[in-house]
Image (tube, rainbow, N blue to C red; front, top):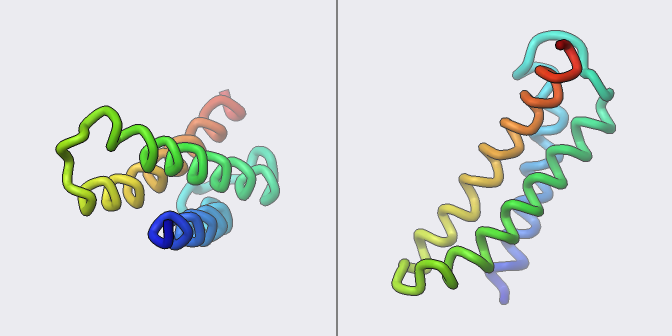
Length: 93
């Protein structure tokens, strides 16, 4: 349980940092403003992170706990980047 609480804090911090940094990572104007970037980054970090934390061990029961922890850190971050890119792609189309 303690590792989930730590992961939740890490996801929240990464989501906030990524939401703020999205203006520098992706050139151009923020299509939905800073609030939209923060909301999208936080929602995707928390949603994908919790799905990884709970579903990966059920799908792959023999997977080492360290790999689940690593996947729960890396995949939400990459998904948040992808969601922020999609927001810009479809808004500018």
